[in-house]
Image 1 (cartoon, helix red, strand yellow):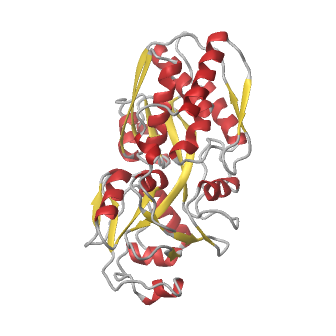
Image 2 (cartoon, rainbow, N blue to C red):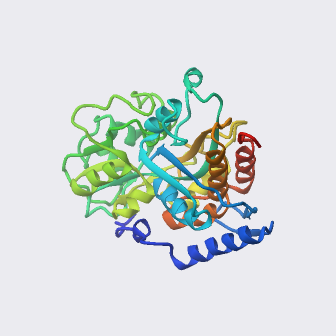
Image 3 (spheres, rainbow, N blue to C red):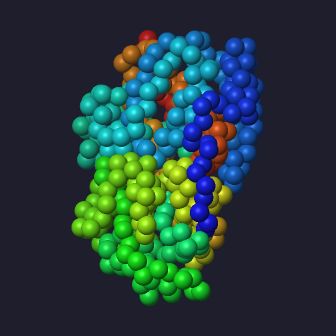
Length: 376
């Protein structure tokens, strides 16, 4: 793939006119108490049903933290939601999936963003009791690199595994050149960049390598792994993106939105069907189409079947306690999540995320309605 210019969508000062129009329609519907349905068609996901329900004004402040992978989408959704419910303030601090899960467990935040799931043995430590997974969007995790003269890098899972384990340390290694016939690769060193924080992006990336490069990938998977010496660590997806951008010969795993935001080069990756596929929203939607969704709405689109599927497509969720203790916050949480799953889905493409498939969107909305509001 070619080098991308820095992405303007990540630096909006306000809502662009199409987004403002959608939010205005939502405000009118809310004010009038209509139950009308709008239709929107995200790339490759079919038609998403967007239902606006009447809500009374709410006054509350919600504090959240967690995954940086979906932060650009949440930032845009929060900005748009403020126009629908101006009495609700939503603060999303990022910090990584591990931080978000820990802060939800300890009662520090009202909800958490996470690209990974909670281990079964850890669920009992969550002070608020049962929590729900609310899927929001999905997106490719790119293999971003900094080789100005190499405009179409091609990789497979085994090669990616060996690069990130520091078993391949030069760009002109025979394994890489064999995948890139006719491309003049430099003899320079490879600098590996990875996350320093507990990260759902790391978990999804390493889960992919564990599944797609069995016997080659030996670092296991998780929100943190023991990276080899000689690698560089960045905080959040943006931190990894900046290392890649500023370091000639660097390579790192970065969500699509952050990669596009700073104009990184991104590789095509060989998928399960043997095809080289770039990290596009269409390819992410193709991966989602074949994923089996569990009863709790967790699912795994990594290394998916399908000729058009991008193999490192990651899901993300908002984790929230089912039994709320503060009435106004409970009303605000449900209202915000409804917005993310309806109007928010029509905004996802603007910041390079794939919307949920209609069936998963409907199940997620039902999950939100199961949240218990005190005194209701």
